[in-house]
Every structure is written in structure tokens, then in C-alpha cells.
Length: 136
Image (cartoon, rainbow, N blue to C red; front, side, top):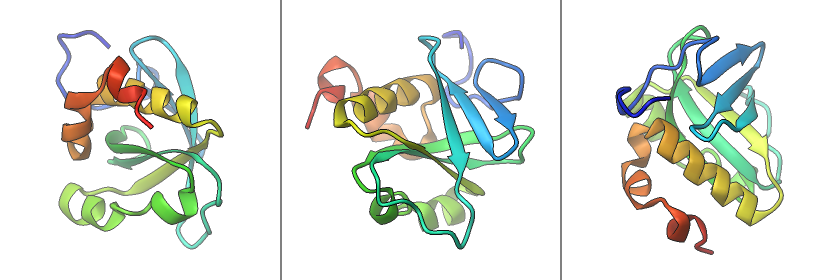
């Protein structure tokens, strides 16, 4: 993504950003890394494992990332802000990615915040950088 693009880019399949692959999305960062996230289906339990997650809105052909997070327990924390996301931002999908190490989760979170500037992460996006991503 170039610096001239809008702050909250609409992500289209086949472009740099997210490529829809069935129930998965491939999220590409500015640095070129690509992370695969899996759709969480309503009614299914989230795993009690550490990982990153994102909320998206729009249809499968053009999802927009509206929130990204990381946690040591997806089952407990991945849905903490879901009601707000759904009611205030029109969230329609929750995607997860398992990441065991805290350092890896925080680095990925910082990359995603800098690339997509999700509207629900405005405070975190302003404070990301080497020092912010190294916090414990």
C-alpha cells in the first residue's frame, strides 16, 4: 500500500491487502508479509489459545478491516469489543490467527495497525512503533 492511499483502505481481492480464499483472508502488510486469518463461525467456540484477530465489515468480495487485536486467549478476549464493532461500525466477520509467542503477536499487531489504521484502533495506531510493539 502506498502512503498516498486513504487512511482506511477498502481491501479488494487480488490487490495488495486481503485476498479472499473461501473462509480465509490473506492479510498483507506494508512490509510485504502475508498472514492468513480464518473466519470464526457464529456459534462455534473460539480456541483457548493465543493469537491475533480482526473484525471486518463489507462482503466477502471487498472486506474492510475495522479492528485488529492480539491476546493470550482468543476464547476470552477476541470478542471483547464485538458488540461495539457490530453496532457502531457494521462488523460482519471475525477472523483469527493462532500465534503462540507474545512477541510475534505484538509485532504482527503493530504491522496491521500501521498498514490498515482500523477505525476502532485509532489510539493504538497512533502509538505503534518499535517501543509500543515491545511493551509487555
